[in-house]
Length: 168
Image 1 (cartoon, one colour):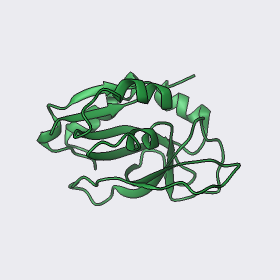
Image 2 (tube, one colour; image 1 turned 135 degrees about the horizontal axis):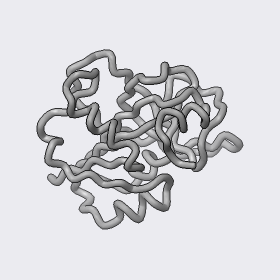
Image 3 (tube, one colour; image 1 turned 90 degrees about the horizontal axis):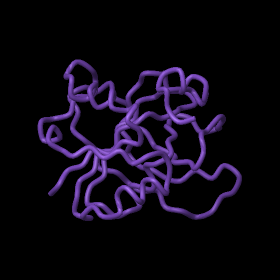
Image 4 (cartoon, helix red, strand yellow; image 1 turned 45 degrees about the vertical axis):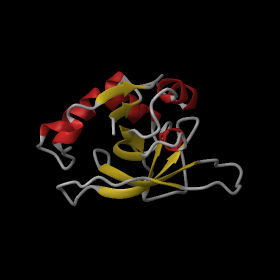
């Protein structure tokens, strides 16, 4: 089974380095060292365009920055399931379960991820993370999808920019 590491932006390359450095709570095993890294760009259309031709029997690991209403900045979270976030309307939409990695450090939180089409500046949801790609990745039907998120901000675009030099 082919393995791919999926990140949104080149600026998240430092997160990959942290995952392979061996000195933090998230240490990837050697089986991911030869995985091809794919930079998708931010958002649904970029994700779909970047991943549409990959074989569906592939195993994907999404690594990226995420916001959280209450997790401490600098915290790692392993995502257990993902769902689109629609703050203004409610309708029946599935939560998509993700595969968990075996990580050597139990301090890595396990959390739900809500994927949004825009940056989240406020939310009543706690003990979760927010991103802009994961639900679209998970919905594409790959054999295994894992995700590790690094909390970059507490729903502050300013703090996100200061840490990541990310999307404008």
